Image (cartoon, rainbow, N blue to C red; front, side, top):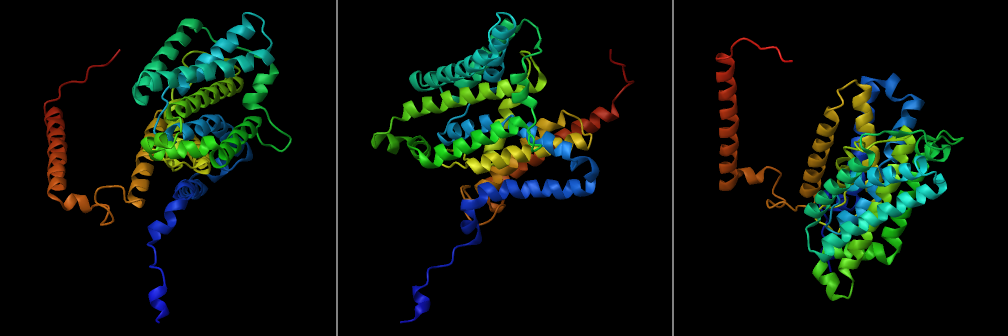
Length: 375
């Protein structure tokens, strides 16, 4: 018998790389940033204090990224993490500054409040059947409003050293204390994901909630657990932010939601559920921290940071969808859909809108009058 007939068919390269894309993709982007900054601004970017700052900035998002990995794997999403972080920290700050609570009591209270707010999110989603997106977005407004009501425009500052150490302390090995806290949460999340029933059930529920329910898994119960974890980790991030700034106010953390979701998605956790990578989430956090630091190092305006984060999310999701052949064009190529009748109609619509915009800009420029000074 010909042994060649017994050989298994060789898998395409994309299929062989697919299990490792959650790590390969963000690591490739990190390497690209390192190479670019080595030419653009090596003296500033690679300073030891700047590298320490990158770790410190990344650490702030590690607890939330760990918890958000479980939530997104369950086909959920939490858009309230920023408000939960701020509200729990403001309550802690009032208890410590206005009522004389010990910081050793205030920190556990903040974590418990964060878990309670996450519990509210989970119950709204599971008991009232409100979609995750709508439920957490609405509660984000509620928590943000409560924070504004409590703070009344005040900035609470000058906290005990324990809290500032949590947010910006340094160890003898030049590793920031928050980086150690953040990495410990990621390690804990990896263990929970890989070694516990909660982690395995999370992946099973995200893959097929109906099948998981038929096997006896309490789908709603585990969803609530994930949102409680997300709330507690958001509160921890809020404490780290408060310690880093040595102050807290209701308008802080405006981009927490975007940044955390971006890190998790860039790390390979599927927005459609059922696939998670804690190492990928860790890589995504590092990638975004390095990207934003590079923008600052190059003196690019602050408001470009969310623009860059948005592009990273889109490119990452598109890359994963292409690699895994989940798009409707299958393996026939990235632009194969443009050759179909529907694709050509879509391209004509794009051309019409772009052409209309260019024509209107041309007319506006041709008919423009004198410039009126603003202000």
